[in-house]
Length: 218
Image (cartoon, rainbow, N blue to C red):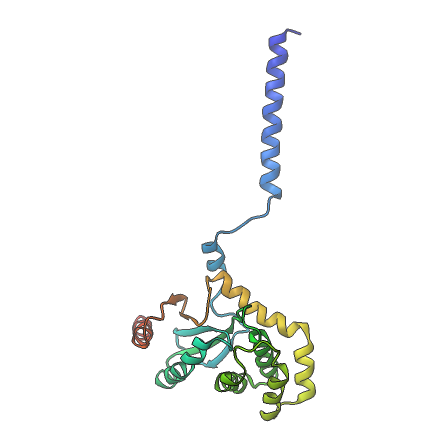
């Protein structure tokens, strides 16, 4: 066989191998969606999301990602309650967990709220956490015992509460919201979405204007 022919065969074989490798990698390499694609695939409101108010037939949903230890969330709490009164029957209000890792008791608080939610007391414990935040926030030791006291004050079945707090599934439920928030671009709290749009918390007026615009566009 001529040398030139051998060279051509080797070259063709190399090309075939390269194409085969590329095709193989295209099949086995895991798909890595962009941040925008991940957000598009993640609903702002999940089927298991906690709803403080449900407006029948309303297309407008106000969703807040909260950290119960976050001072800004605590400061925003009275305003959110005011909005609930102003837009009662018009807007569905949803709360999702987003415990900031740097906050010592953020996860403990979220787990306590979720444990209460399993007994139909989500809103009651939600209120309790924000109303007492100054008593336990920004402290380094665990406040799980204090949160248990709150559950007792609310009249929860404490055996069920203790089992829920100890159940890894309860923390997984909290992390479900946290992971969804990350995919949606949530970086801090409070983060608010009106329908599927994240809004800037520039002022109380801007939030109301965004809600009014969303209602007008139904």
